[in-house]
Image 1 (cartoon, rainbow, N blue to C red):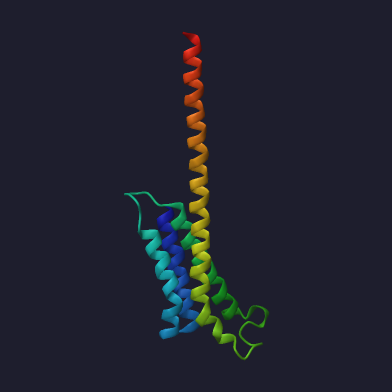
Image 2 (cartoon, rainbow, N blue to C red):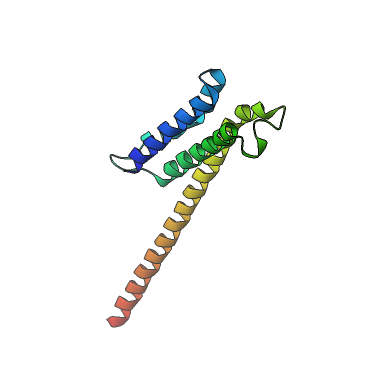
Amino acid sequence: MIRVVGVIFLAGAVLLVVYAEGLHWIALWNLSPLALAGLAIFRSPGIGRLSWSAVVFAAVVTLVIVLIHAAWLFDWGGTRTESSTAGLIFLFSPICAVLLGAVGLAGVKIAGRAGKGNTARQASSAVAQKRSGSSTQK
């Protein structure tokens, strides 16, 4: 289900980028982070499973690209009309999107490892208590 929703959002983001920019080489450059997000969603560790780090990476990348292109398209805060170098945003936004997505991915990986560490500690303390309880009963 998450994979289907992700594909729908990615398709919408691709259409927004193409609508805002047209179809040329800079638009292809801006579509490259969305291609990476699509690969993250389609690459799965097992059949039917999807890692949360891939979901977070894809969501952050898609959100950044969509917000930047929506700001350009609707001229939020004069994004398009107030600066002579406003078009440079399209050169740097894919890099920023991938970097922010990587930060989100790393955060989820670190949180997942910390959670597994706590679970392992709890399990080992439960085993230790069980052993000490069973030796005192004898």
